[in-house]
Image 1 (cartoon, rainbow, N blue to C red):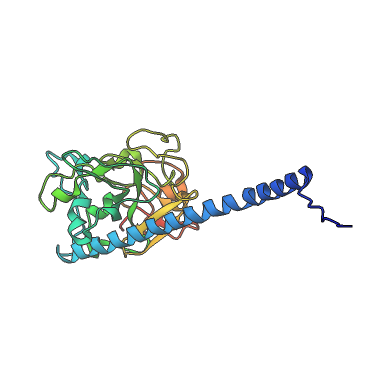
Image 2 (image 1 turned 120 degrees about the vertical axis):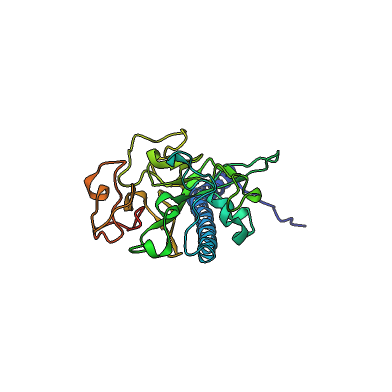
Length: 271
């Protein structure tokens, strides 16, 4: 008598258990993968800032130790043009348009004349008005910070050429933002927390572009990820005064670079 083996398949309950296990694993792993991808983008952005920082320092060495001041020449004391166009000035030292764009910045350029490229970073207004010898503590003074919504014709400009009219400069406050764009840093210390939204010169979000913070380039050329509340905004300070970092006011004077207040990681002040 021949006996045939009985082939047994999965039951419906067993299949449902397997599917449930896969779903649970996916729910656990997908956020981990998303965080890993965001960390990679944040590191790429940090690398961009470091490369631009080297270009700025090279520019300074060729310019009697003066920092890029922008290509828009102020007329009649119009300081709203200060610093605009700095990206066009340093482009010859970078020779790459891609380095000016953070991977997390959705801003696009234009392929129609004049061709523009996204600019994900802004220069500190205080730095554009300074030379290398002016810094009290260059490791604490902000040189570049993250922005969104700006594109510039950086290939067609250079020193003395009035072409790049959008790569921005700012002192960390919407009231002191020159050019086109918005802060991607999150609301920094000493700033108005109500100025958040899709409005030119405002803070794009309450928190930063990269996991509740953003990347900053310091005047000595090093870059790091900093939460917005650890950065003091405003005009140039001096003599160890912590100013708006501890007072809680906005549109004032930034903490001086030698301020010793706990929690201060960076300042828009040069002195």
